[in-house]
Length: 365
Image (tube, rainbow, N blue to C red; front, top):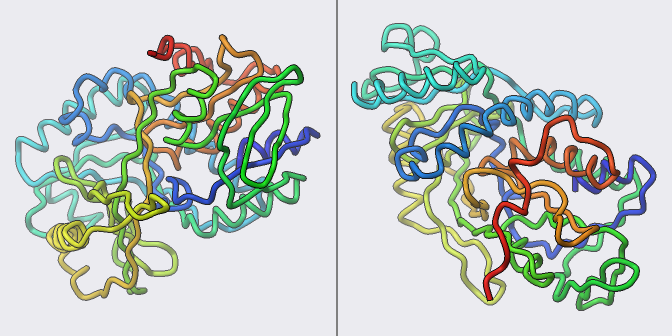
């Protein structure tokens, strides 16, 4: 939607074909991440180099959210109150200290807080927490408000929305590309694949390798509560994120698994994740136990190799890819702006060579 809006705002005729699947953006919880995810670094050490290389992009992406929301002219409950990555042991806190050293060298504003200093700014944290990393450049927003504002902006810019229908086949034709759907055919001179994990199948139609994988994840949200959690809260070694929206509702997530099932291959919640996620949340912030969970849902995160896939496909002129990195909501608007610039034959403000689709090589037979 952002890619289309940026292109339409500059006078291009743009259509968005969207099957309506519950992808990352419309199922996201609104976290604006900047610091590296400690748990991810432990689980996937082979991908850390790619994540580190992308840190300046994350920092710029959060700043871009401020610019973008100003252009939207809408209040999306954007708050930059900082992010806390909490530790429950000295070993975890020492790992965070090493991470901070690397992040500061790459331009982030982060520091380690021991328990006493942490308690002064986050008294809501439970006794199990011994310290935390504070990243000043992290924040949060309300994705329901942001998504509605982005949709209205794109439509107002002239984007044609073709919704509830999938692209069954994508082929090259003399005039560019042909997208075949159950409701007819759409032709275009240029195509941007911005379908999250679904990009893999669409790219393969044209012989292009984009190894994007779906990662079904579980989310919970509570009823409105009195102000309690002022930061974006994560854990150094366990799957949890916590944030409180301006509505008072507390969003609980952090990577608990869901699954894809049913005839529509719909992201579906799992009872074990609901219980485990809520139990861990109450362990970190005991007062959360007083609030009732009123809704759960699942969505598809997209993973590749620790970095986004952005820009033109050299082997297929006129084809572009816009798949943000692992924190897709954080990176979404900036990634869209950068790719839109390449579609417009304009040099983007950030060199996209490290994120090029060409890095994956040819599609294996």
